[in-house]
Length: 204
Picture 1 (cartoon, rainbow, N blue to C red):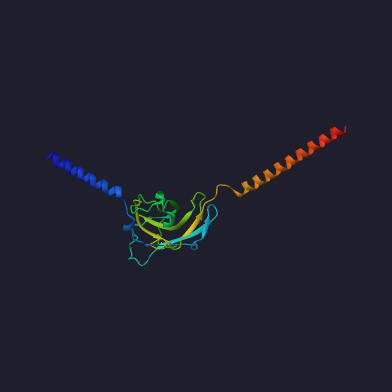
Picture 2 (picture 1 turned 180 degrees about the horizontal axis):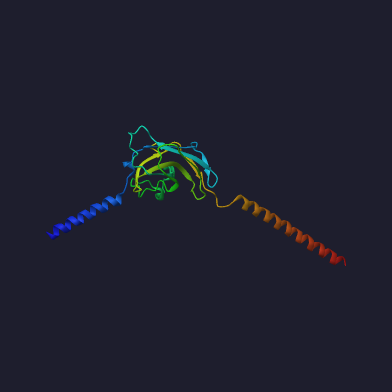
């Protein structure tokens, strides 16, 4: 009897662990959000300079009440397939807890079915890559329950590129050039003065 009870307890624990460890899958979500972005296909945005306007809303073609559990919407910057090749740290996984597609958070807002927009300035630390925009709707338990994106299912349309900053600022380059020019002029001036001093001493 004790052995049976122990087996039942162990089975229950294993089933609980299995259900909690796997989490929400992307393929289980409905695409109930309509997402658009003010980018042009292939447009290049510079890190720290570029900006893009993102809009999202509920797709009214779904039955009324489908969005009753939606509490929050989180908009994310996601890697396009072309920028995931040979990069395991950007790999797409169906289990959203392990998925690396959308690593960059853009904004989080309380859910509203319409009139949602956000003007996003590209952050300086965003890596050079090709991207798309995706929005997830979350329930009160902070679990993904729906999504929308500004690209097609194959993630090939309406993509845009981000070009990361080089780490040097234009003003630093200008200052460096000016300093180098000043150093060269000063060096020539020093030699000229020394040469004049040498000539004047010889004449005396």
